[in-house]
Image (cartoon, rainbow over the protein chains, first blue to last red):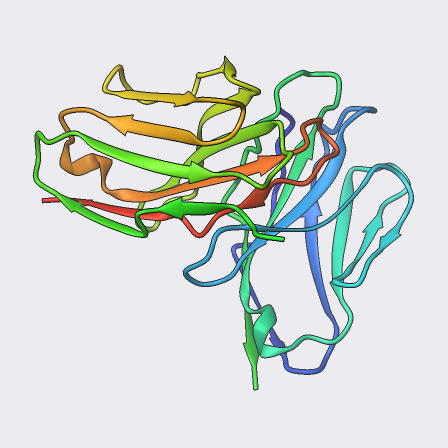
Length: 112
Length: 114
């Protein structure tokens, strides 16, 4: 699987937008970009995924660079509940391997 | 509807004993996955089921680990002759399958081997 690089940690003030970056310079043309997050003492939960175009859902937005070598998860208005470890994961639909390969992720701290 | 459930939520065992961890996936999900997360470590893939078969067992760390899935539903992860390094949170996830499909995770079983 292609590798992703994320900052180890980030801080943000409550009720402000948060931009979580992910670099994936070796991404292949068929790799989807998935984001999961893990709240304290819980299992991971899906956040969003995309291929080329920017994506929005009720939880977040995903901005994908034109060359697809990087992406940014955007939380529009952070709340204390958004404090979690955020994982950026590449998945190849043609690879036939369904597992998620988690890196170290970004630990997001929200400051009240 | 109910999410993925796992039992027990906590398990304390003595070194050398066998343990069984259970996962009830979301109804209708054909794919089931086991992961584990050791203290301070990342999430590590163990095994993937599609229906009752396991096309990918590459993450099982040793032959002391095995898993089965029956009726395309419930799965059991068995660890024989537990060791202290097996202490971790064991997470189960399920999905409809396919690389675009999101995986839904259970709350995990925290295993402590004394």
